[in-house]
Image (cartoon, rainbow, N blue to C red; front, side, top):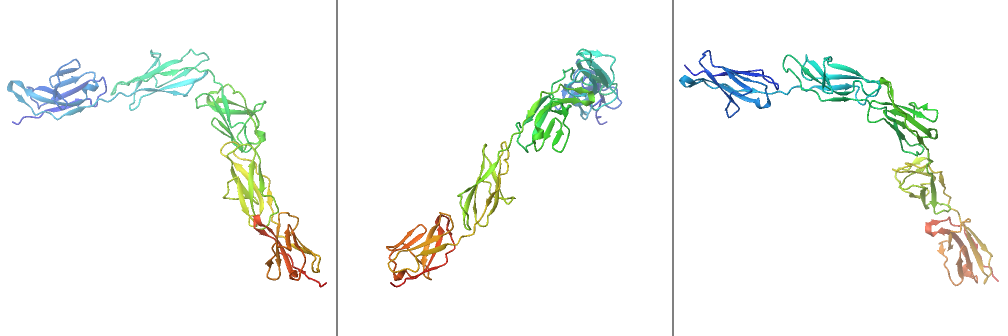
Length: 466
């Protein structure tokens, strides 16, 4: 007959640490077979040892450990006849980790006198556990439930200490790993700490008050203002979120003393009230607009406006004309050309630091004056040969005008000469002669600004005979 093939079974599999594993080898129904056991790819022979027992067709592994994981084979032998069966297919023994117990605490965080604490033993993946509880390494035989309650009295004795749990059961796995220790201790009531940022405050800024009672996030907070401890409630400008009171658009009414206090409402616990902080409101600096140069403005003029803000630096400037924001310029000075840019100018400053803005400046009107018309007078007229004639040109009261003189219909420029003297607003003709007869005009000029007045009406100089 053909040689039979060994069949190998394992029970249980997978295995948990400390369990007993039984491997059974079968080669048909013939009882004359003995059995050889092998492990891993190199077919190491499994021999009898403290934890490995071979009896008939069975290999028993006691107190299974990580070293027992791997491939196993078996083979039947009839030693008296030097016959060996075909070796079995391999089976793999896998060692699963024991589930680890853990203790959850409710409420979490710091515990205070009067608190009741619930401890729960959590063992993942399996059910039907019987629970064992320990305090300070001493077994608590009366506690076999999944959850236990501890009441913390006003003294720190009572049931404070190190707690842990573990589970046992009748089927696989028969036990869990014990949990880590959880410390239950009483903490003295903390004092709230109140901070404010920024302080002092400028009008319109956002102020943040932060209340802290240690690192425990379970606290809610109560806010008080002024000596009579008025409760600060949520409002249009006052937002309470967690440990923060935010005051938007700070105003004069927000000045004063502030306190805070932590509360755990579900546990009727209040912290010690904080020390007070004082919020002070400082005035914003005011912007002002100056113009350069300062003179009567005419069409075609160009002027420079400067935004000045006392105190502080690093401003970004915003300009307005007739209450409309100018989108481009953000500089301290702007240059405007007339008449297109006439109007009411204001500026305001903004900056990254504090204060973040200034007050808006008062309006500076940029007013354009119509170009004046020159007025020309002559004395005397008519003139007699040899007399002195004085022509005077006037363009209002502005002394910045220079004057240009013209003669006859083709507007010949009258220049300085032996008999023609130009001084300021005056053209003086000495020793009047026939050639001086004719039409005269004058015109004012502000050369530095390329401004010219409207030309005067003509006057006619007539030379009378002697």
